[in-house]
Length: 488
Image 1: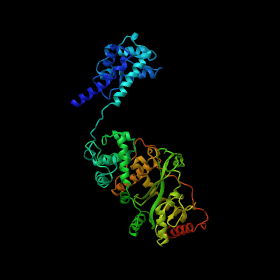
Image 2: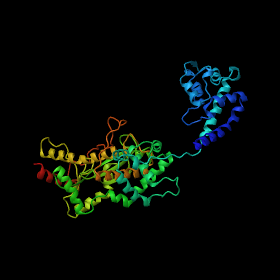
Image 3: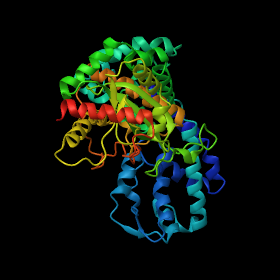
Image 4: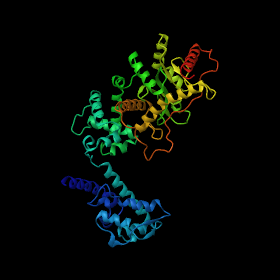
């Protein structure tokens, strides 16, 4: 209680120092009225109570609208709370055109002592006093909620997407890459991680994340937490720990067996597609010009390549290219493209990926046939490929519903480099959730009826003549081999 009294006295001293502004305009009699009647200078000053100048401002701003004012002097209590209640519950409608009379009634001052011009000056003085009080306000500290203890397991997962055990595991892994607190008021690593995870999960503005009971941080502190945690998650050894394409035949065969058990055709070791993550328009002096980030849907984005297994586990993510970049170009620059080509060149031709018609047909990357006749083996092949390839679309949907900062209508308000790190961080956390078999979050009330997950079809790239490119011709032969073996 003593700290509250000291805080109120401190505010009172600061505000009283501002009285000289009003004394230069009015007599001490009017200043005393301001002190007694205005919440700005009242002993019961609190952050929650609107200032009296707010009500005066309404009179000036709404010149053609009536303003509620209490003209009864006996209802003007010296207590700021009841004073404002009198204003709110006023039963008189007074035209705001006569501002002098309104201010006079408001302060119980004779109308002869106050003019329209001086009323405006009084308003300015009051607002300046309030603004200086806000600037000089001492730093306030809040006790954040101990979510690890106070929230149930289901509440914790809903809020942060991971279990308490997984968060503790990550705290131990990320600690060497993060700054330890150096004083008692410093932000702990646990608070930094939980703050970043809450942002990833909700996609809310940083100020809202900071106001959350689990954080109790300012907006700049939230921004620093997101940056530090995403930088730590993007360390190469951490990325390789949770995201990795199979680098030996044992792992390749395990993934191929997963697709075989679910879809009935051997050989598939992954499905590939690109998804757009909306970002705020970047500055023109970045790695790419600003207009290069505008995708063909007309908004700024990063085109993210994803490859997943049969359980929607992400095996490869590439979040380096702007929104206007073609999917096939990103694939050609990918290390997985080179890896799969080398695998086939060395005679291991029983492994391939599945993609849509926007990708070039290759023996290691199969796409759909063009316009097959219905109820033929070719059409059955297309149905199987579409069904199997939908795994990557489901993976993208789960990723963005779980970490809603990636949804189109949320928009990442960061430069492309930081946005890319946030995307990779969310992919790591997505895989942790898949490994732990955590439930997929449901739609939220503020979601659009038709959520845009950022996957857009592209025109077919494969030419009709398969003899143009030897690799294309080899891809056609693999297609026909599968059709003869499994769809006839």
